[in-house]
Length: 399
Image (cartoon, rainbow, N blue to C red; front, side, top):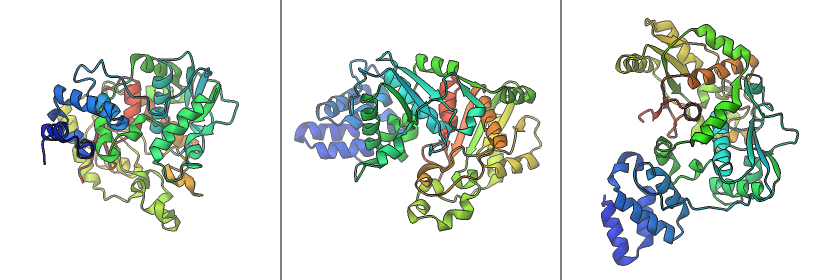
């Protein structure tokens, strides 16, 4: 493997932009991030900016801006947005939304961070168009107009264009032509990170919300009294959360039964892969975490109710807690299932109440650690932790 300095010197000597781009697009930033020193990073930024390699330029800038003084570089505006007529944007969580709560919060954060620092427009979020809105509340009034589903809107005229880039283009075009916009969006620039599966976690580990954004969401998100009462009744103080994301085949109970009848593009989607799980190994991980972290209490959380039932049965430690076995994915048709007639049969008030309780627990935790079968980790744990200022670590299971 050639060294980064060799690639840079080769570009300076030959002008070979293709080799330069291929190398730094495919570079393993999660593993070798520290190998790029300040001089190298600034050189890469100058070259990518000059040659309009906007995606790579923005990725490098956001990845290293907390490590080095990059204050004289500014993010490139990919698909500029015109906000001259914009007064308000409300992001709506609806029954048609193909993502979970983490996806919705990610989209809401993107809207706030990209609009509220540069315009007078207000950004609101609205859970009221989904049953989860009975338990997770916001200060925004229920949106009167039918929200534009960004994913559906973008897909309707995408053709052969890149999915995430076209979604960004569609979002900015929609904002530019709006005054008071009601939208349903999970888009965030994390989705256009180069080699997403490899680099998403690295990007997220180095991503920080502005204080203004955190203050806004903390103020505008609150919980129904039933959630607060359940939380108070737990009476567990000074706790950490260890979360296991075991995949949609474990969190959507009727998916296993119906997947054989679904189209091939669904069966081949990594979101719906059936993973092998050793629950006893996950319990060992919990006991090791409890020992190593020296936390007073450890709450085990998972999208898989079977795992929680297993740990509850075998657990002997009074410091390890299983709160409930009533988790559910909050999307009626997660991810590309939204393109089919599939309907998640697990969505019922009792499960949504306890899912909202999980959000409350994560928001009040001392530390949140997640392990996921997916390369990009758990958005549910990540975005709640970031908004509520809880230290967070996102991991994937070794494959």
